[in-house]
Image (tube, rainbow, N blue to C red; front, side, top):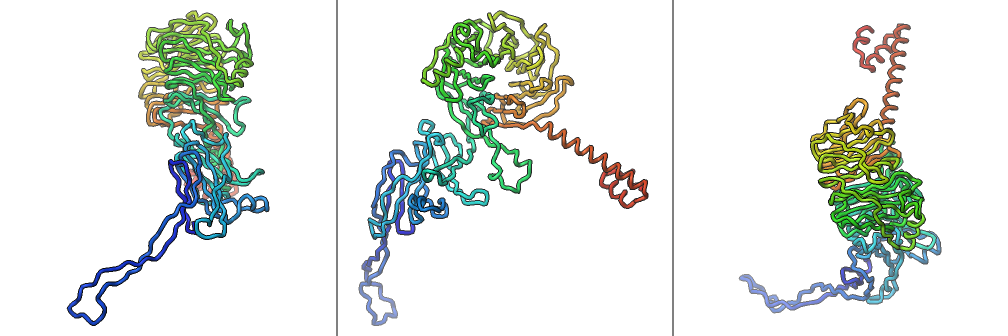
Length: 583
């Protein structure tokens, strides 16, 4: 600080203010050696002056957390105090510090100069602003690890603090005036390292969704916690007014919360079609149902003897409101789990009224299995529920897919044909067909009526791990151990597009309910978002075709009127050498 002060902080949970002072001191030097040509000058002891710097601690502020990072905000990095009320809160002569630490909250502190000299030149620090509980990262998540100050730019008129948290996310925070004084507002967040992505599910838009988010996803990241991310369009002022339309389609993935309840790694996730509930299962042998709006666990299912590797919620939206005895007897919504113990279990849900009440009170309902069956002879990799909730499909390492009636778990049929274990199976949203993905590098389409294979899609260089129907039901998208995402057309049996998406296995793949976005996640710890550009390409192709027809018509008109110079220019522009020769 310009007044001969500096500030320090650390893991002793205090901020110290130090006074820096300089004073000249003199010290004696021994007699110099006589030189050969010595004169009569004094050669005795001499005194030499030097500067001594001293540090005096004059203030100590307890902050009750280990301070990981501290920044001194100079005047040009602070909001301007325009009104008299604002000047009373923050004067231009005040000293302002920004701190963050283990509690996961960014704070501002201010101290005012007193006009005195020495140890009383500055007042004690007092709180100036603090992050809200909603925006703060929080102590339970690990807190912040560092704080940085970005330089001012033309696109950001107010200063930006960049806070890095324990999960390696970078949060850009603006400092600005609010009704009650200075405050923080989160500008955007860059998601950091997540670990291996084991599964993800797109949460359909509902009453609980953030209005600023186009999509919300839940991600299992090789840990006992499930992370919620929101996908929102980037703001235009962040990119500048001179950016073109292609850049404006840029999206930003931001943390929206965390579901903490499992005691071991979460392996599978599924979201309800109404967007209100989420089911998770993991290595702790349990399945949990979460209320997404409150991020509270409303139900726990225990009964499996091994890790639960797959989970699926029923697909009829209206069934989630059915409660009471009807729900217990199977008329309401349900969750299906498949475990490493080779069993399949059906768990009825209590209904939205009971689960919402449990979310408000913080209680966890105990779910009881209504049906249970030994489904396969080897590990079950995937379970899926039909759109009308009538059938349940399970895929196993025993190379088969089995279809079960959801009402009594009676075997409807067995699909045989894969040469290796089946990693995924999904019902078509429109037709009575099922698609499967296997370790034998193929994707197969099956008829539910007679359990026969009607299509086989080959093209992956390694095992296929995930497959999904597009919303029209006419195309498939698959991902594999080769890190590739492939788009298939069912009618022609051909691969329309191949995307080199990841550097490792793609374990997670899901589509948004509207079908405009595709999410993929893999062992390389990346979450990729893909946008459907089919309409844009079709429009561009149509425009190009119309323009070509228009230019050819102009060429023929010029030739008819013997305007050979104009005709030559158009022929060259259309890249028609034969027409150029004719002209």
